[in-house]
Image (cartoon, rainbow, N blue to C red):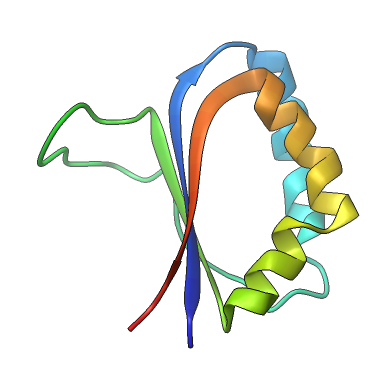
Length: 95
């Protein structure tokens, strides 16, 4: 069953760390069956306050999503994201 990870960037704290993250994250997808569905495109906020940005990635299964997210390569890159901004990340299974 398709599984999605939805990242919402709530606020930027250190742009330089986000720049490092952006330079590294693409390479972490190598060898993983991932499809980027949305990445910081225009938003129309329908309810509540809108985030600074949204990224949605699709994987064939929860196991594949966790394999990428938990991988040493992604976790190393993610340390820069953690330092650079406040994010929310949610893994959700499709129907």
